[in-house]
Length: 311
Image (cartoon, rainbow, N blue to C red; front, side, top):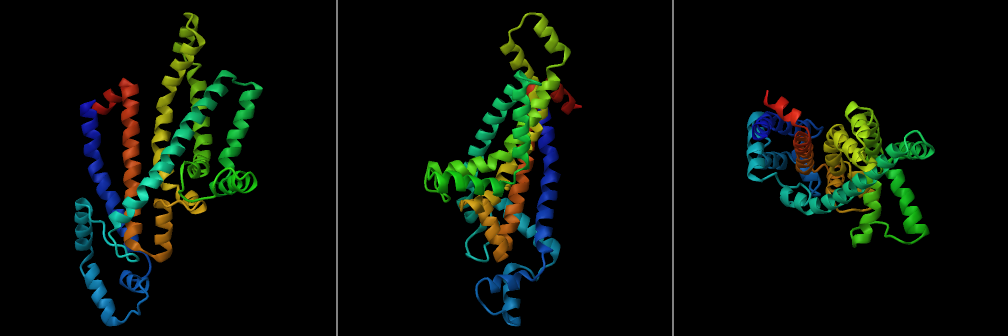
C-alpha cells in the first residue's frame, strides 16, 4: 500500500503543475487589461501614466514565463495575490469564505450518503416490486429538477408558507437545513441510482448465490453485496464530494450563504481576477485530492487494486 500511494503521489506532481499553468493562462487570456480592471473597480480614471504604474505594480510588464513562475512561487509560499476590490490578500478572503462552504458541503454529503444508502438498500430488498419502481421514479424526478428551482420551491414551502426555517443567511443551525438539502438533492438521486444498480449486479454474482446456498442470513448477504458494490460507487463519490464544494455557488447565491461560491460570483461580476484565479486553482486541487482519497479507499477495500498499482 505504501508503494502504491508513493507512486500515485509522484504522479500528481506533473498533474498539479499542469493545473496551475492552466489556471494562470485561462485568467490571463480573459478580455481586457487587468491593470485597467484594477483601476476601474476602485472608481479611478485610467490614464496612460496610471496604467503604466499599475502594470508595473502587478508585474504585467514582465514576460509571460516570468509572471507564471513568480505567481507559482507565491502560491507555494501561501501568497495568492491581492484582491483588486478589497485590497486584502486573496488567502484571507478564501479563508473567511471556506469554513461556511465546507460546513454546507459536509452537511449535504452526510444527507446524500445516508439517504442514498437507505434508498438503495430498500430498492434492492424490493427489487422489481412497486416500492422499487416508485423510488426509482422519484430518483429520476430528483435528478431532473435543477438546484435553483428546488431551492426556490423549498423556500416557498418551508420558509414562506409554513414559516419553519429562515430564507437565507448564516444565522444558526436552522439556516443550514434548506441549503444543504437543496445542494444534496441532485447528487442523492444520482448516487442512489448508481449504488442500487451496482448492488443489483453484485447480487447476481456466484459468490452471493453460494453464500445464500450456505444458509447465510439475509442481513449478512446484504452486507456482503453492499461491500462488494462500493468499488464502483467510490469513484463517483470521489468526484461528487468536490462537486458539492465547487457546485455550491448556485445554492449560496439563492440562500445568501457567505461561502466560496458567492465569493467567486462576486469576483466574476467585479472582474477580480486574482480571486477568480485562486478559486479555479483551489477547486481543481480539491478534485484531484478527492479522486486520490477515493482511490485509496478503493484499494483498501479491494487488494487486487493495490497489486495492480504496483505493476
